[in-house]
Length: 257
Length: 362
Ligand SMILES: Cc1ncc(C[n+]2csc(CCOP(=O)(O)OP(=O)(O)O)c2C)c(N)n1
Ligand code: SF4
Ligand SMILES: [Mg+2]
Image 1 (cartoon, rainbow over the protein chains, first blue to last red):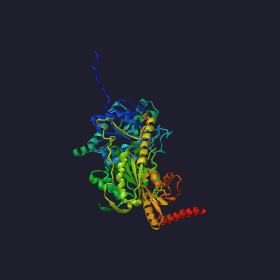
Image 2: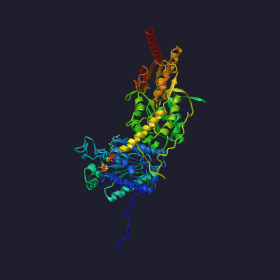
Image 3: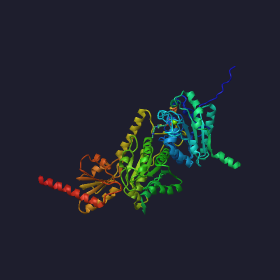
Image 4: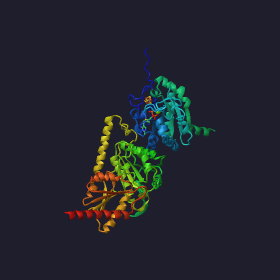
């Protein structure tokens, strides 16, 4: 007898039924799905505006079916600030790469975080500039070879920037966490972090950011399976996973004690 | 109607509030600090958006966000700050978003100084940022026009879905004058069906300048060009002052026009036929209006607080029909009225001598 079929997965309606242009094994696709599912989770598709970055995910508007705005390279947090201040009832998020957020857009992310701007930031850290062909990113790991660090990142460039650590020194942000998408369990954890982050904005708690360590097999010059393994072997040592700031949890603790 | 004594910078605030500005974002820089302070003082009690940004790059991007959300958004700055805004202005133009940018020009290049200057004409009228675009540029010459043009810039921006620049300078910004607190002639408020409000009961929108496939960007550039041609047809503005019979015409915008107007009156007192053609829109440049003012003219004198930027547009308009003299100052210096009168007298006498000698030879 054949068992009745059990549906174990449905594509979120917030995700368009398109084939992405991302390379095989790229993390952007998984993160897109998690963002779409988190939007679906709260039922906020019709009031969401996402600010797209300049980077491989500049085409995110094709895949996530919500209103979108462009931003110049790195300026997404400022554009999001303008949208959110203009229409506070909208749910406003940015989706940014590590070059976009941690190099050219450093000022914008720091000040949006410091204002406690009520927006949510999805920060995809793949330790490289994907779109422009694999140059060093601010997050490139010491020793990592890129087209502009042909013998590996060294003291010449300085060590990588740790965004979660840096932003969590500020008073205003509500939630800052670093997750990854290298295993099913990690993907589920990443989704919970994104849902938590989005919830903070919906509860008017202010700025939230989820950094996602994400494979770029193409410019790590590795086959997809090996690239995914590299996250655990190599990336998490520089970028430890975890919740770096959680004001709500801290508040709850304070109340208890 | 009652008049109030106020600075040009304060008049910008008044004009913006009257135009219904919803959101202001800005970064401090002299000589426009009265505007950002005035905006904070006026907008916050009204429950509208005021935010001091971390830079001009951020300010113009915040304007971009608010404009994309369908709101009336503006920023103000002075020359070095406006340089930083060029990135955002190009994105606004490419995304077809309305916004108002006021530039209270100061001396340059670089940090220059905080004295009044007109060195940003090229930047304002040639697009300024990357790509093939133009922005409407309005040039006030009084505190009253600082109010009126700021007000009207919002209507123009909405109508053409384009950033609009009000190009002023530190002299006009700081100077106090009587200003009538009025709503200048307004255009019909246009709807913004393209605004990002959430994809409810409609498809999702993407407000962007990005068009990767060549045919799509080529088409977008054609659409933009059509809008620019329409603006060139419909929007050139200039003021002709005593030009009907003028044998010598001065041309200058903003603060320079004020000096020229006084020089014209003094020359007329001496019985000399001088006039002034003041461009009000610098882009589109009022070519036809300039030519029309030259019917009787033997000489055209261009006055600028730069070493010749508007001069290029004047040459393009005149195409050699009359000889052009140029007087430029920069770094905060400006011609005196006495100097303009002496120049006018000399040129008028020279042209009448020429006429006399031509007559003799005949
Ligand atoms: C002002 C400006 N400078 C440079 C570029 C070129 N550029 C496009 S994407 C990019 C880097 C993107 O890297 P990242 O943010 O890490 O995104 P990824 O592609 O890795 O997802 C650069 C430098 C640009 N578009 N604009
Ligand atoms: S280059 Fe890297 S980041 Fe870009 S799509 Fe390919 S794998 Fe993804
Ligand atoms: Mg990257």
